[in-house]
Image (cartoon, rainbow, N blue to C red; front, side, top):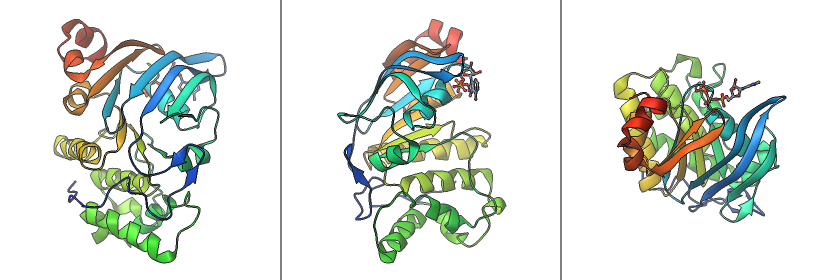
Length: 266
Ligand code: ATP
């Protein structure tokens, strides 16, 4: 993946950015999940999970298969109902809102598995990211697309090609660019490095850092690759069977030999 740096903010408050009672999209915002309980039928997948992601920071969410990482992102983005707890975006509780409202409030979710729509062109896929815009002229949308094409040059070259023709790294770029077009303040990334070659994986991690450091986006990064995630994160949270078993700055977690051995696999 090559992704040229761009002067315009990923979280820029474009004229079309959605706004609601949780605030106006654009600018940094913290995310604080407090005592979250969620699951599937009888299965309690999150049992009182508390995670705080500071505005503009990278928080790695780690843990073995089935720990509850994906469920946490699904609950925050409104894809599954929460049973208890708060999800504070800045100071506003968005728990219980639907996925569309959550996107409008400023939280974008890139699910695991590179969810491009293969039958659509690259540009048509990107336009899906602007569906949450309440207003915005054609020119605003065109400018927003150009902003992402400047950030992700390979997408610009392939804008009229079907998404099915893209490589794994390009697909990952496409889903991240699509999420950025929703003008989020918080970006939830579920295993963005999954299935990518090491070189491309490193480029994805580099992009994550730039979105946080240069554009002030608050990023929650779910990763199986704990070592790689902790290398770029400010803070880390380790889940096991739906509970937080460790929460500390990333360097402290990476230096904890017992924790690495028991939960992180390195
Ligand atoms: P992985 O890395 O394997 O995706 P994870 O940490 O993301 O693991 P989750 O996918 O959140 O874990 O799963 C947490 C728990 O919820 C597990 O016990 C899992 O079996 C269960 N679970 C996940 N999705 C469903 C579902 N659709 N229906 C029922 N149970 C589910």
